[in-house]
Length: 638
Image (cartoon, rainbow, N blue to C red):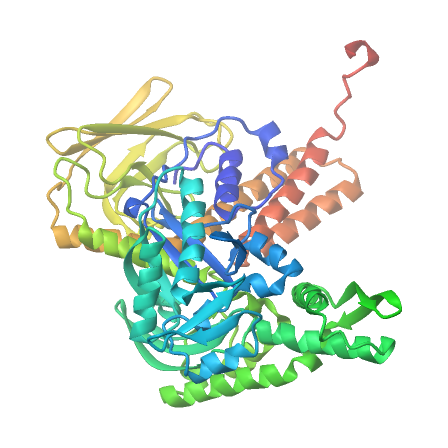
């Protein structure tokens, strides 16, 4: 099996996909010679997928066949808030939330509870007492809103938010965006869906489709019964879906449009207000600015308690006797007591959903988490209690819906596209270390076309490499079409990673693929007859599979590559220990411990952990490698 030339490239590729700091500077010193990375050209004509949330909104775009979640200008999700700052002047997102701290009456939010609804709707009436802006009845009976002496429809406010999302996507891609798929709650009525589409049009978007949020989250799941547990900022929704051969059927749905992170914040806020009343004998409920600050503090404390056992809330508020400061410590157990009644409501809805679906909890094959509130430990605990299994970790719960909406966008665009004549219908490449697919010629490349990449050996003294030629759009080699093999022999016995084998794919106008492997002037060639006129439905099916499973495939790809890196590192450390039997016992023990940790990490499904263990093993390897080598530096060098 061929391998990439250097660990440096693998680490760089992993970092670019996961977006984390891996600390791989050690590798940059040791192994030079990077390989050209796989091209990830924008797919689906830059159509974007949008998760228009009650509290936060997110968007993603296809790059290659993998949805990439795009952050807002400040690197976070876009808060679904609009602030009225003047006549026809509106702020959107984080800046709107900050602006509203000074004057809460100018902040517009919770549009998801209003859009497409009549004023006499019970949920609208309930919301009137929960928001600082005015909700009134329009001439046609629709619910309208007023802030800063200006009137708006919920659709217009939605359009402001979607317009901001469009700007973020255009800033990221550096070109105009005009098409989108928007995810909405499953319980949205036809008028609500039409108003959402209208909001997109007002924002300058051609809305190709509206997709239900749980279906978006489960779009790339395999066959079986899937429970989608969606607890966001403004609502709770649990669904049981049955997936069979790509067809998704909703078996049951339950939830509460007024049960979400906001309710948890409100419960903690009420506790803070009561604490202030008890300790300072002051009622701050009439002070809107103080309440807004405390609400913000409660939200931050809730987030902090997801990874810490306690949070400290500090604030200053005015009284008749002057300003007073408050410092309140909230432990995780106290927070869980405060929100216990909300957790019980969640449990109730989960049990009802299973009952409505007519299935037992043991029949559920997978649980998918959606929404930022699923990071709360007590919420995760109730998920396991209700479904008796650990939820899937394949997707970030806060990104799952945006990713699914983008996958749907890619599928829609694939159906709309015509296959181009005179181009490669599917990508061509080889199987590499870890069973992954390395593209050498991308799909839709105009013929004639030639592409080359550098590969190397997998182990020391390897005398031959077998290149398995593949065609397809999946990230894992086993999911693509096998065309044939080219075995390159006569490699000199040298350490792993030293030979530079150039592999070239050359497709002529006659559709014949020539594969040539070359090393130090020696070359071997194999030729394969390609069927360029593949059945259109077959090609579309292959492309759709690549889009549908691209996100999960990329996760598998990353895990496979990282495990390959780990195996290479284990071999290098063992070689150093073998060649240096006299290193100090303490250093030898550290090396063995690092190897044990790395082997254990390889068995996990966590590539982040494995990479950190690789870096730790490399650090020990460096110490062992240079132990006993005289320091040749001196003051004369300076």
